[in-house]
Structure formats: C-alpha cells, structure tokens
Image (cartoon, rainbow, N blue to C red; front, top):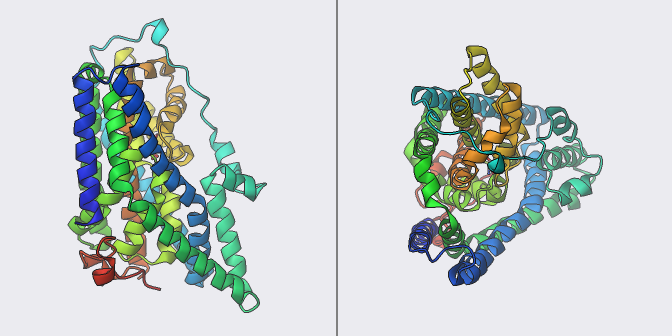
Length: 432
Ligand code: ASP
C-alpha cells in the first residue's frame, strides 16, 4: 500500500472518529474524551508531526534554493522563473477571487443572517501593511529571519547566497558540494517525517472534528457550501484546466500526484508546513527540476493563496449582506486588488487569512466585527483553502518548469515516480 492511500485512510478514519465523538456528545469541553483524547493523545500525535514538518521547512528551503540557484547556472534564467511564477501566482489568485465574488453575489450569501451582538464582536490582530511586508524581504538579520520563519526574507537570502556561490564556484567547490549534500540530507529527512503522516493525519483531523461545533455549520450552511463549492471548483477544475491550457500536461495525472500534499495541507492548515510535501510531490513525483521547484514552491507557499482569496471574496459578500451594505463595481475591484495583495502578505500558517481579511474590509468600509460570525467555521474552511493554496503552487511550478524545459515528462507520466513505499523498484530521483 503506498503512502497516499495510507494517508487517505488516516484522514477518513480520523474524520469519522472525530465526528462520531462530536455528535455523540463525548467531545464536549472538559469531558474525559476531550481532555485525554482530543486535547491529549490526538493533539500530541498531530502536533509532534506538525513540529516535525516545521523543523524541516527553514533548512530545507535554504539548502534547496541555494542548490537550485547553483544548479540553474544562469542568473537570467532565475529572473525569468521568478517573473513567470510571480505573474502566474497573481493571475490565478485574481481568477480565484473573481470567481468567489461572482458566485457569492449570485447566491446572495449572508442575506437573512443577523449581525453579531456586542459580546460576540471580533477583535483582530492588526494586519501587517504591504510596505512592511515588502521591506522585510531584505532581512536586516538573516539569522533572525530564519528563527522567525520569515519566508520571503529566507528566500531572498538563499538566492543571494546561491548567486554568490555560482559566481565564484571554482574557488568554493567544497561549499558547493556541501550544499548539495545537505540538500540530499534534508530530502531524506522529508521522507522520514512523511512516513508518520498516516497516523498524524488521523490524530490531527480526529482532534479537530471532535471539537467542531456542528450546529454552527447548519446556521451558516449557505456560506459554508458556497465557499466549499468554489474552493473545490478552483482546486479540481480551474487550476488543473489552467495547467492543461498553459503546459499541455495531463491534469488528471497532476491531481493524482498532488493528492498526498493536499491531504497534508488539509490536516495541518498550513502551506508553510506543507512545503516539504509539495516539494516532494513536484520534484520526485512530477519530475520538476530542483532548480525550479526549490524556488517556486516556497515562494508560492508564501505569496500565492488562491483559496484564502476565495474565502475573502465570499466573506466580503457575506458581511456586506449581513449589514445591508451595497457594494458597487469599484468596491468589488478594490476587493479583488486587496485580496491579491493580502495573499502576498498572508503567512502560510493556520488562520492568518482571517486576520488579513480585516485589511480587505477596511478598504471597502465593511465592519470587521462581523468576522465574529464566520470564525467558528473558519478552521474547516482554512483546511480546505490551504489544500487549494498548495495546489496552485504546484500547478504554477509545473507550468513554469514545462515552459523552461525543466520538467521530466517521463517522470511526470510515470504513476509510480516518487511513491515512497515502493521507492526501490520504481521511483526516480529528480533530474539534474
Ligand atoms: N492557512 C492558510 C495557508 O497556510 C492561510 C490562511 O488562509 O489562513 O495557506
């Protein structure tokens, strides 16, 4: 049985157990089951795994980017890859938010729902300004940037180190070899941590579903179903279709190879923690060259949030309807623009999309207190949108790699490539 199937079994059985505990009333706050299972053993199993993934992210991103830049061997090509991926990331996010706004408006999401009472008000942390996000790209202290997981700064710093090694490579053959070998070690660590995924995914989803308030989902049925619907449409249709259109690659193969990473994203609700799995999927399963994936995957996990933008679109229409505020065409345009910008500033960790929503709301004068209404269902929505976010990262990575001739098509079409359980017989490693 390969890992994807095992993770899927973990996901389904965890969901089933969590929902059963919830519906049977065993999952209530303070109960034995909550204390010892949901907040106890399940939380422990899940959090150990998430920490294991996070432990990999910073060194993995650093070494794989340095390796990728040195491997590209051409700084102009690096600029092209950066430019193409940035444009595609922004374009797919704009398509995502436009779809969400359109569908939410058609269904008039939020009409008939009462505004929150004063004791339910949502008070959010302040969203970082775009200027501060852009300024922090150049780290004044690279060690601090790594310690804080400031991804854009880490990407920038790693590229600079890579370029420097490249420009004096005859003088530093040992360092060059060292980063290559460190990258191999990091990829091995990814494989080791991924072997725990089926059990960890089981623990994560069981713990979350045991505590979810089901009644809230019924009250917000229209919001949840419209948002869930547009997210699934984007992840399973728009993105694979865009991939087919721009690169000619088979979208069904793409979907089958990204499934495992999607499940990681779903259970961790963090694009950043999913970077190791997305890198594994794009490099080892889809045959994208390290020189492209090492850069576009962490870049996408940081700036590309199609699913988050969709949530922001549906939430905007929802709150506008709850408060009876009419949004004009120019407001909608502003929401599209702000959501695309917010997606750049949203860190790939759970729940940040909601914080950034306040930034979108303040631009179109919507009351941020209204966010209190959707906060209870946001965790599940976060899980789904994170899976969509990383699907976008992988799709753009494939398009860019294909356009630069950096995708091994045989590996892409080989259904066994990169499958962890049968590595020895079938898998091929990423090509140089
Ligand atoms: N959890 C999302 C991610 O990591 C961000 C968000 O929408 O809150 O991609």
